[in-house]
Image (cartoon, rainbow, N blue to C red; front, side):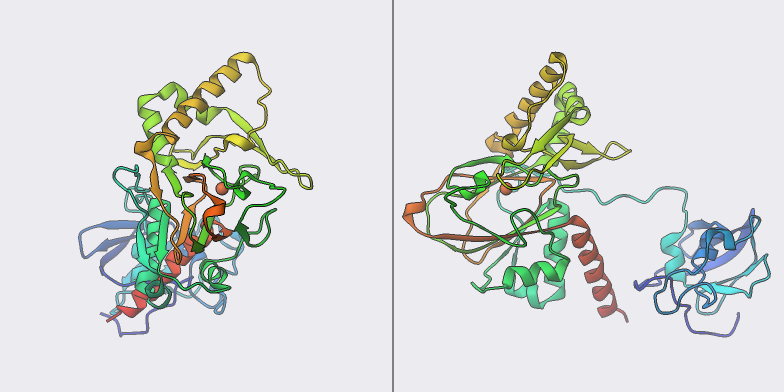
Amino acid sequence: MKTAEPYPITPDFDVWPVEHLPETVSVEDGALCVNWSDGRKSLYHPFLLAENDPSPETLHVLSRETTLSPLSLPDDLTVFAPAVLSTGAVQVHWSDGRPPTSFHAGWLRSHGWFGEDGKKQAPVLWTGQDQPEPPTINGPDALKNIQAWHDWLVSLRDYGVARLEGLPDADGLLKSVVERIGAIRESNFGRMYTLEIKDAPDSNAFTSDALLQHIDMPTRECPHGLQFLFCRANSTSGGEGIYVDGYKIAEDLRVEEPEHFRALCDIDWTYNNRSRTTSYKASGPVIERDRDGIVTGIRYNTWLRAPLVASLDQQDRAYRSYRAFAARAQQARYQMTFAYRPGDLLAFDNRRALHGRNGYDAAGGSRFIEGIYADRDDLYSAVRAAERILKQEIKP
Ligand SMILES: [Fe+2]
């Protein structure tokens, strides 16, 4: 057993609780092998260790970013003579003669290869039947309590829609909430917009008409990832929000109507905005997937679709599959329908939770809803940052 020494820093600013300790360490084909106290075994390529070496010679102590070039390391780099220090940190020696360095056990545990890919965060799929209202958190509580703030963000990440309620009618409140998550993403509607009735509307949203389910900004190469709607006043009748989980519709189509699912994944539609002063245009399939076939986004908006110039066979396939998607989006069982109440701040994933509304009677009262866009990355970062704070708070 070696003398206790401070835990090495990690190549990041995250918190890595040590829940399992390395018991024995060895070298397999030049790589580090760690056997853990719970019986699991993990492996580390020497290049991975070198790039994340916390020594000041290779890691900038302030930025916590590596200062190495990939070519700074010899082709045949290996580690040898590994040892578990009394703190649980793991020390290795390097074949290129650099001084030995040690790695934080919590960091090692989270970055080892255990023989299987880690599970990806899976969305919670919903219909209006099993999720009649958005997950809802007390607004003032969320703004002052990190756990409640975290819970709201996690609901937004997992359900694609989440609401704060009971917020005061205050100028700048929506902006401050969004900017606490991340950067506002502007659009051709400005940095912030108000859902109001315009004399010359540059979107159906700026009328009192009912709106079919849709995403905003399908006209962009990457449509805005998040949308926030803050209801500051509403005394009109009608105008309820009607939301559907686009991912749920996609998964149901994958199983129940696979021909339409494939067409929705394969055929690009072009979307263009209708404006006298701007002309945005972008293309993509209704259902976007990653290389594993997992649905990652929906690009669906009936009134911003441009004519599809393609063979009649292709048009037929495209229209029939689009109609199959629409048939579900407009079916009551998929729809979560709820009123915008004064003090509600609704957040949703614009590329997953399709939104629409009932028409409303503009003469019957006032309706004041502010909107701001941001991106998914801001949400994911904010969740991790909140988790970092929570982990520090529960640190023994
Ligand atoms: Fe919209």
